[in-house]
Image (cartoon, rainbow, N blue to C red; front, side):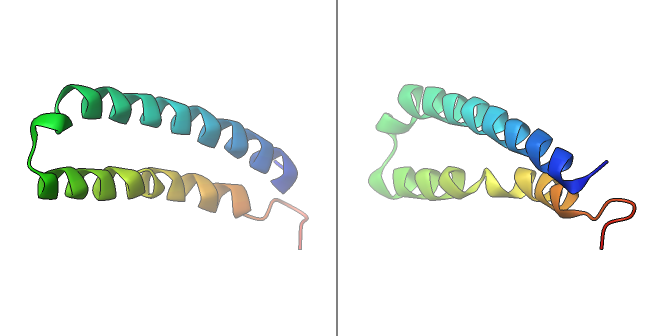
Length: 71
C-alpha cells in the first residue's frame, strides 16, 4: 500500500477515534468530575487531555511506514 493511501486511511481513523474519545471523556467528565476536588479535576483533565496520544502512536507509525518501491 502506498504511503499516501495509508495517510488517508490513518487520517480518517484519527478523526473517528478523536470524536469517539472526546465524546466518551466528555460524558464521563460531565457525570462524575464536578464532584471531585479541584486537584483531582486538574489531574483528570491533564491525563485524559493527553491520553489520546498513546493509542494513536502505532497508527501514526503505520502511516509513515515506507511502502514497497518507495525510497
